[in-house]
Image 1 (tube, rainbow over the protein chains, first blue to last red):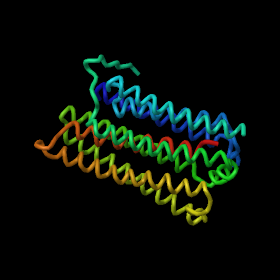
Image 2: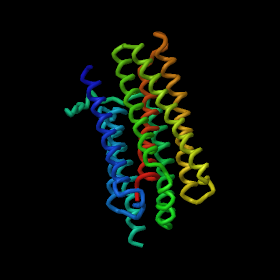
Image 3: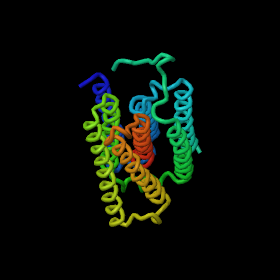
Image 4: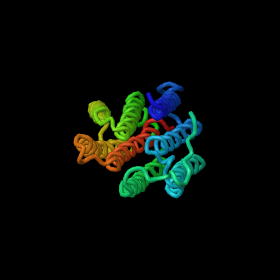
Length: 94
Length: 191
C-alpha cells in the first residue's frame, strides 16, 4: 500500500469515526430524548462541516487546487454553516 | 497524518473545470433547500423533533458510512488509474457502484418501512422535507451511476483513457457523498 492509499484509508477511518460520534450524540440520551438541544445541534452541524471539508480537501483533492478555488470552497462552506446555525439559534431565542 | 502543502507551481485543478461549476451550482441549490428546511423548522421545532423520533438513526448512520466507503473506493480508483493499474481501477469503480446500489436498497427499505408505519409525504411538513431531500439525493446517486459508467467505459480502452474525465466522475460522486453528510445531520441527528 503506497503513501497515498494509506492516507486515503486514514481519511476514510477518520470520517467513519466522526460519523459514529455524530450517531452516538443523537442516541446518547435514549430514544425519548427528542427535545431541543443546542449542544447536540452545534456539535452535529460542526461535525458535518468538518466531514465536508475533509471530503473536499482529501477525496476531491482541493488540497492541491489553486488558492482561489480553495477560498471559494471554504467561503461557501463557512457561509452555509453560519446561516444554518444562526437561524437555529435565532429560532431558539425567539 | 502528514500535511502535504502544494507549492504554487504544483497546484492544478483536479478534473475538468466544468465539473466544478456543476458542483458549485448543485451546492447553491442544495444550500437553498437546507436553509428553507431550517427556516420552517424554527417555526415549529416540536413537530420536527416529534417526527424525527420516528426516523431510524441507525439507518441514517449506515447510509452515511456506505457513502463514505464508496468515496474512499473511488478515490483509490483514481489513484490506481494514475498509476496505470487500470484493472484495479475498474474493480474499485465497480465496488463504488455496488455501494451506491446498497445505499439505494437501504433507502427503499427505509421509505417502505416509514410508509407502512403511516408516515407519508403528506403526513406533515417534516416528512415532506424528509421524502423530498432524500428523494432528490437518491436521484443524484442514480445520476452518479451514469458518471461512474462513463469512468468504467474510459478505463476499459487505452484509446479513450482520460485521467481528467475519470477525476471528474469521482468529483461528482464525492459531491453526492458530502450532500448526504449534511442531509444526515439536518434530518436525523440535530435536535
